[in-house]
Image (cartoon, rainbow, N blue to C red; front, side, top):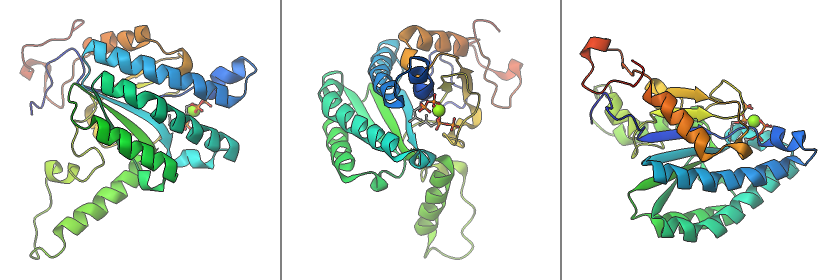
Length: 250
Ligand code: IPE
Ligand code: IPE
Ligand code: MG
């Protein structure tokens, strides 16, 4: 893998989909209406990502911390996820989008686990776009799970096992089979990562937009990509050491 990506189109885009509640509040609607509209945005953005040539799209849909929200909101989010998976699997198959999940999905309700298993199985052979849903996801929890997985892998090996390289260790993260994000977008004006892909984002570019997630459009995604294309990613090197592709605004 080239350590310095040369393409102005990010291979992997992660999105912290935020602002559903405020979108609803602004309209005097219950929060769940914002989430309902947010699901429509997921469809729009997945289609746009495919059209724009993004290979990996990772959407932060439900964090480990989100269980602490009021029970009716958590229940409503689970119902929407159930609805999304039932309705969208056929579209994902038609559009050749592979579905993956990251997070402690084993702790999700049984109906969701079954639907996820079916959708992932039905789409596993596709390679153009991989849509990864972060569900019951938290980067710290992921780190604990990766450390435990790594410890199991080395248990029983001879004492004095050398410390792992990052390439070896990263295989134990939930994202072990997919590349790190090049670009992370957060909607709704908040400028924080809220426990999303902390390790994988070590060299990601960030774009924050005030747009609330239900209003996020293909144009917003294009605008983030334009912003990204203007960045110079140096990965610790000097500008002079970088290869031939130069960002538009360098
Ligand atoms: C993001 O929207 C969706 C989830 C976290 C599940 P929010 O529900 O966080 O919306 P705000 O931040 O309250 O506006
Ligand atoms: C982050 O949004 C989680 C998801 C988008 C699923 P939150 O709304 O939960 O994050 P905070 O609480 O504002 O940091
Ligand atoms: Mg929020």
